Amino acid sequence: MKSKVKNFDATPFDLTNIFDSVQSLHLTNSPREKLVVILGATSTGKSSLALTLAEKFDTEIISADSMAVYKNFNVGTAKPSQAELERVPHHLINILDAEEKFSVGEFVRRARPIISEINLREKIPIVAGGTGLYIQALVEGYELSAGKSLISHYKQTGELTYDALIYGLTSDRAELYDRINQRTEKMFADGLIDEVKNLLASGISPNAQAMLGIGYKETVEYLKGGATLEETISKIAQATRNFAKRQLTWYRRMKYITWLKI
Image 1: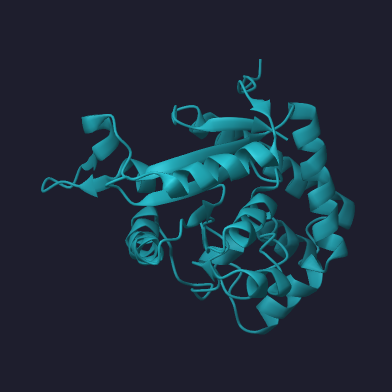
Image 2 (image 1 turned 30 degrees about the horizontal axis):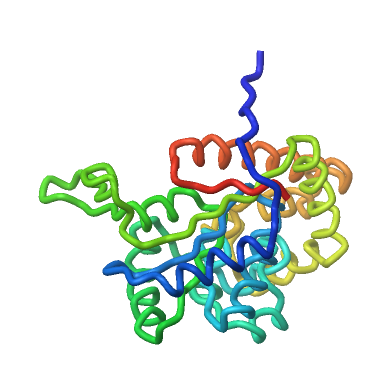
């Protein structure tokens, strides 16, 4: 029997309440740096909410997405559009070539000084993305000990590294899967096949780190004649649904998330 991840206890999504909470965080006198985090399973609207908040509070977004770091991988990663990137400053997007590796340690190392710099300008940065390990390591303050084991500031002290509002976007499972199916079809309508063709034509190996992401490896298989278009779309949708289940399982360990039902 397949295991199922239970729905989160969530309050209805209310943008006015979110605005009020972020404004209250602005006014809080805290010794810790401030941060807003938007996380959730794929296809729940994290980027849209982050963009809305960033424009409302004149601040910047830090991507917590392990695929958005790669240059020219746009359609299959559902990366913010060029227009959206121009509307609000984004960080940790389009910073690596396809063959380069990216890790949780590298994410934290790069994100921390950006958060500090934005706080120095008296703004609250917004971390948005679905890579739960990256966000957990950042907000819980993971460090390597002398013995090379991970130490969590949060587990030692009960306090997050940042004075943070951490929102998780969720929905009923059937609605989430429908969103994922629609998103998969939209990727092909938006040109995923041509994107992968161009990446391969530019000399990027099918075995490059970025090419192993969901959507890309299946499309490579399709271009090699290993599957029909219908089979490829189905495979990507299924792989994405499985990924969403893994995301939700991971978030269970992050007890400090405030869940909002979209």
